[in-house]
Each structure stands twice: as structure tokens, then as C-alpha cells.
Image 1: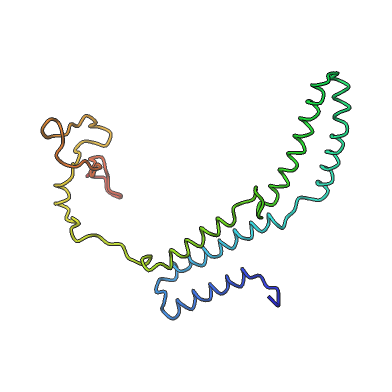
Image 2: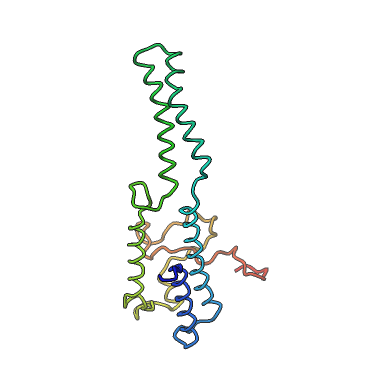
Length: 211
């Protein structure tokens, strides 16, 4: 704070230093090419932050603002004179004056709201909600169950022959035999339906034979 450094850049450097130190001492035991993806993801997040910062720092050009303000003022003053010279009606003349003047000013104020979407106005992006979602994701990574390695149950069938006998394997082509009728009593198959495991037209890469 005393030197007015960018806090995001300081935190970015600290995180990269921690990752590098953890890899050197053996805390993170992964190959270097995979670890490089971590640095790329961190740098990509910082690039997106800079892109968002450009929207805030780059204002609409000042000459355009002055020109638009002047044209709106002239339109507001000249529209009643032009409309009343054409339409001589007590009701329709104010209506045809109000609609275009109101529309142009409404578009101008909408563009002002969209110029800076980061803030606490009603039309700004929900930054507090985004931060809350980010906090939930970080807390999820710190949960003890987040590092559990997925596995299969002891009752899971992994033998090929057992799986082949427990599912329904189609013998026709993928797009050929579409009128395959399930076997069993009353036309109801007794085995579960699965995807087509083997197609006669399937060819191995580098082989001219079909399986």
C-alpha cells in the first residue's frame, strides 16, 4: 500500500512462487508439462482481468460526448417547431414531439449505463453474486472430500464375458437392421438394452480388415 503497487499483480506473483516452491520440494509431484497448464490458467485469468479493466479505464471519447449532447439539445428545441408546423392538432402534435425526443434521450442514458457495467447500480453486473460463487468454488476445493479419488464398488462387474452376457448386443449394422425385435415372452426382452458394441463395418486404424 505504501508504494501503491497493483495488489492483483502481487498476488499473482505470490501464487506462482508458491506453486514453483511446492513443485521443487515435492509437494506437487506432477510432470512439468502438466504443471505449465497451471501457470497458463493463472495468466489467462489475469488477462481477462485486464480486459475488464479496459472497459472501466477507456471512457467514451469526450468530443463525441459533446457532439451528442449538442445534437440532443438542438433536437429537443427544434422538434416542437418542426412538428407543430406540419401537424396542427392539439393532441397528436405533442405526441409526435414527445416520442422522438424521449426516445433519443432514453438511448443516450442507456448508453451511459452500459458504458461502465462494473458498479452497484441496478443495471450493472452482479459482481457481489459473482464473488459469492467464486468463494463457494474455493471453499469446495478446501473440503476434505474434494480430494477423494473415485473408484468402483467391489460388486462391480468388470469381466468382459460377464458383461457380454448381461447386456443385449445388436448383431446388425448401426444403420442397417432397424427392425430388430427383442426376444423373450410377449416380445419383451429379458436383458437390458445397451449401445451397439461391435459394428461389422468398423475398421481399425491402419488395417484394411473389418471387425
